[in-house]
Image (cartoon, rainbow over all chains, first blue to last red):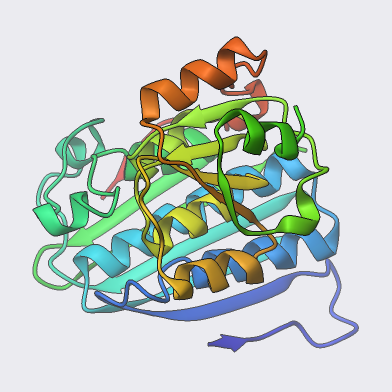
Length: 151
Length: 129
């Protein structure tokens, strides 16, 4: 785990957080999202916004753990704006539109037995975000960017 | 409804968080699909589930659930209870099944939670590249 914060004196104060996420490491899955949530609590972001950001971060982190070899979950927090980026080295998504459909999932049974793989992850991220972008390269990886604004 | 009353109604065993039994919960959500918990539960719900892995605790943390009730007598491992303790959650264990647990709590006046408006982020579509 690594955390970086902007040096003091930087205008438009922003907090940068970055956490490595390992594929199939279910014991730690959710730890990065939890840390981002606690950082938002310490800053004093409204609780309803924290909840949305925590859901986005957790779903994005779980996607890396379930599907990818490894990745990074980053958060860029500034007044009135949170940007969450989940970037992974993994199989990529061949059909993003299909992956966005509620109920569609490629997760194997052992993931479903953990309560995930219900095909709600990306749609959950979209629902909780003001703006969401997915960039994916099949065989190389996926980058999900979610921006929360407006409070 | 106080957690102590919920404990009594479900004849539950307190696995951790005995110091939190005076806390109040105003609504509950019952589910074994953690993605659905994230998608459909409202703020600060009591979480009832038959799953006992660490993702239940992580999910409870994300949605600000103050307590988890493990139904069907599903006992989580000591490591899971330790994680819940670290996160400040109370954990209860009942041998009652999910349907009966929910029915008893609903009958006693604990409503189901509905997704709050604040949960919706006003998603404006997905830019796929």
